[in-house]
Length: 367
Image 1 (cartoon, helix red, strand yellow):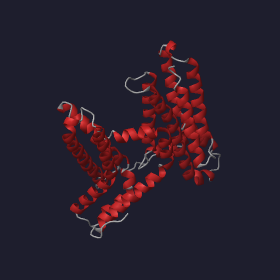
Image 2: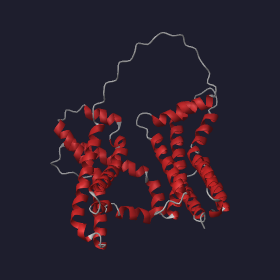
Image 3: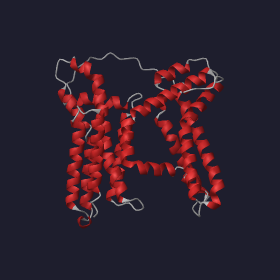
């Protein structure tokens, strides 16, 4: 990443840190991007081409609805910056940057520059999307094309401003911790946990996924919510959205939530392995419980779908297809979590084939 020689060293440092963080994030998502491009390449292209559509549509709506639409677009545009804030500025780096003798004005300029680095790809996507719509030039767009472009630029600038505030908040000095109470002397009595394996799983896996800068807990919650929402929308046949697309989203969500959870568990196991090997007792029960827990989100969604299917008129469903889909989905998630010796490429192939198989089976659900 080359910068002009006139760039202040502090701004150049912040830009290089953000650039490296984005490169690391892109490398970590490489396998997921392969899955997404292979499965939903046309869908992703359609989403990119429609990113400028809310700006044009806002000019055809009453002002309360237009403001709400543009506000939602600005917030969604800033969502990547919010999700990546801890990766852009890890806690040790943020603490070190706070100690530098930098003026508030220069710090604000650096925040704006880092936000611009994040917003540049989105700006290119806005330009490409607006160009596609202007080339197609549907009849409803012609009267509002010029003001629509102005609104798109304003929305992008507002997203840049909000992103700058998100970056600045990450460097804000934390509040001083409240003074702790003086410890009281009490007699210590050891209480053996009723379920030792469950207690150790909670201490070694569940709690670390929610503490400090670890985003695994929030990530799995979002993925499970997406899997639940897409499954409900698919089974309830939400209008205006093609059923095959909903089936693809539901199947992909089931597989990806298991894949991400199993990867997180195995990464945590790699960190804990030296300590676990030094234990005077076997840790096999804790490891098996941790691996089994990564299956719970997908199996919970499948169980909820089975309960919902009992409430739907059986005459409109292919009952054999539902059974085959449930069995295939269970086997797929069990294979993802139960085959730890797979290479990275083999794991990607397993995930892709599982999603394709489930989508093919699910397409026959309403036939």
